Image 1 (cartoon, one colour):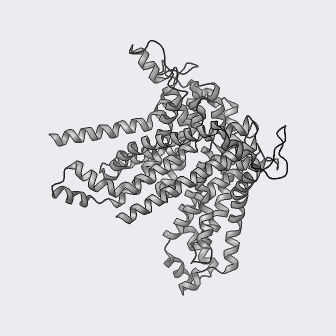
Image 2 (tube, rainbow over the protein chains, first blue to last red):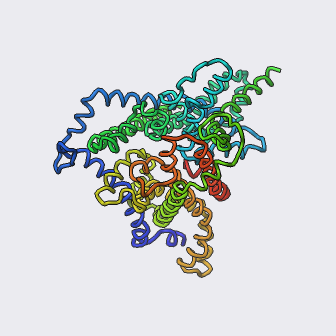
Image 3 (spheres, chains in turn green, cyan):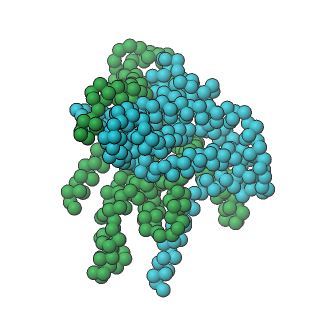
Length: 288
Length: 264
């Protein structure tokens, strides 16, 4: 009985899927195909796209040391941000999973609420803190440790600090959703068998949580390397990553071919990192 | 003794991490009550002057209304087409279901900046750059996968026995759908719509590529403003935006688990 009621007839299924697939095609698939197409169009001397096919933009990007340096800076920014955000998110996730306080709901909301606050606003907050006349400089000047304000904003360091804070909630959520694997009884058993708290952490908690921590690191990495607003505002035009270069090529240099080629490069970086991650994860699952 | 010291250290660490996580929002809140036209911390005198200034700033007001319009339209379109797709995908296995579902989820793994460049190149020849329709198209693209995922998980949590009972008592499939299934999904649909709205409202990368002076959303207006000026007015505006975003968040939390909805 339930079989006949559950399965939709073919025409109904088609009718239900069609509008969604059309929307997906118009808003996502077509733009991506068009992006790839534009990146291989020849370009005239005055910057007009011509019909045809050429790999000039890719040759230009791959043959220019500057873009390799930008790619390296992008990967470095992603690694640094992930290396800071995940260890900082881990204690909060562990705390939220374990705590029995009645404030748990509020504390969980506070850890996740920043996620639903615009990146622009949170970056602005960091500009206020790290700016030339910002909070930290004011405090250092007031305390007499400094006589002149130092530049804390406009640079890679400021970008990494802001991105770490902005992406931490993603890491917290990702680790929290994996903490279910951890059973407090396993830890108690290890402790009863004479393990010190540090040993319990290293031998029991960490191996169980490694997949979750890796997912968190991957998430922070991919979000960091594709972020634009924070490097643009915190970097003050002095932080060069793929995203800022793509933005410059489309809005300042108006070279769509280069912008397209760089976007495809970023997409490939994404795909590469995600497939490496999946390979490591499956190897780890085999080991346990 | 040693144990309580460890506990103290642990609590201190958690407090410090929370302080770091909430620092920008707290600082923005404090600065928003400042009276000076430039940014200093801490503020000298507390006042609501910045808030009055924001509410009289027509550029921000227009951008805010425009953001609400774009978010509302994008959420409505995503919800309409995404709910249908989720219903089809929740059905028993059919050929190609896994592939179609992966296709619907794929925008979540493509960086927004790449999508932004593609959208700019597609919308430009169509004359849709810097228009309401262009922005709605772009935001449907990023909100649709979340709507499909949230409605799909809502459908899976629904007890099929209810629909069956309605059918056994003589309801037609159509009646069972309208009277039983849809009301059961109400909180899920509200949550999916609000999440879509919030994502569109906060989106700040794609708008940088496809919006301009005519079609300016609030994040874009704030972005342009803080590039040149960092006065307390924008802090007051930020506080208002954060408070406004809290309303849908509270509504969603009552209906579904946000963490689940975002990470699956």
